[in-house]
Length: 190
Image (cartoon, rainbow, N blue to C red; front, side, top):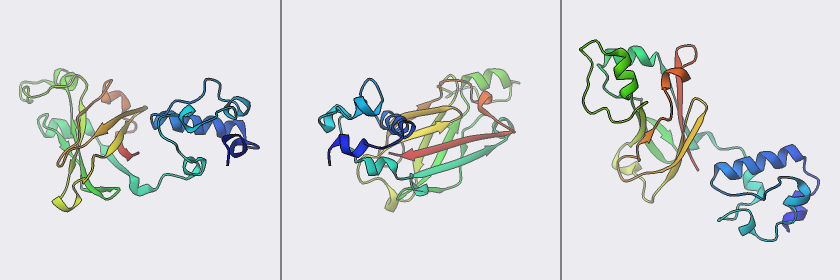
């Protein structure tokens, strides 16, 4: 099936959504996202470095490919832990058993310093996220690629070694992302 016949008859909004998903997955799309220009693509390389079937883009992402952590009252929890990282309960991310590690950052340390909070070892400006992998049976056998989602940001891609992921530094103050006392953090396999 050609690209033109696969796109024929689809709603332009659906096509824009597909192009957005391609960009999130690290693919470049044609310059003008309309059915007429999208149908002129002659090869999968015109869409991006890897070929994705249109049917794959239309499938909803399985819930097990996403791990979500609701951090209730993060400011209070950081104060109680004297600024040490918060660690989530164990959860599944695909075939992996993971825990989130959330560090508060230098900005939080400055705002909440009363002389009793930890001052050393805080490396990032606005905090950071990292995944820690569980038992040896769930360590990634090949390099996995995933994205962190926090507030309005989707950050990544990040890779992982045998016991932990690369550290993701947050681009702005996580305190601004707290809604109704809860910070929503998630990781998605892609």
